[in-house]
Length: 160
Image (cartoon, rainbow, N blue to C red):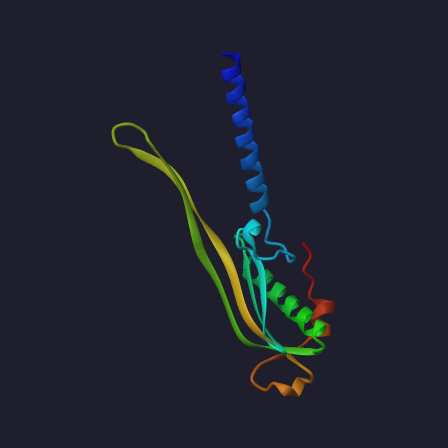
């Protein structure tokens, strides 16, 4: 009997520990240095170079990552890529931002006499997809706002 109780207690402790870790991971906004992969649950950055002076950058944040923070992250990443490739300026040639309800978690219990009660929650996901073009001069791109990469690097903070 003791071994059954001991085993059940260990199982409950493991379950509580797993739940605690899961809650801790979801309590903060997606950090700037997160790369999109299996272990980040599809959250973070994915960057693809689509031309010698252009990149497609996508960022997906969790429920605690609002649009403003996601936009800052993408602006900063664009400046970093432009500077690394030797372009002092950059422009967004395409930009899309969404905040979507992506999942639902619910629990229901039968309370007897066909009565159900429970709760559910919906999670939100902020996603940004941009195409960035690096520019040698501000005058190269007339269709949209041109950003100074050095200015962005010095003035757009992305503390975690």
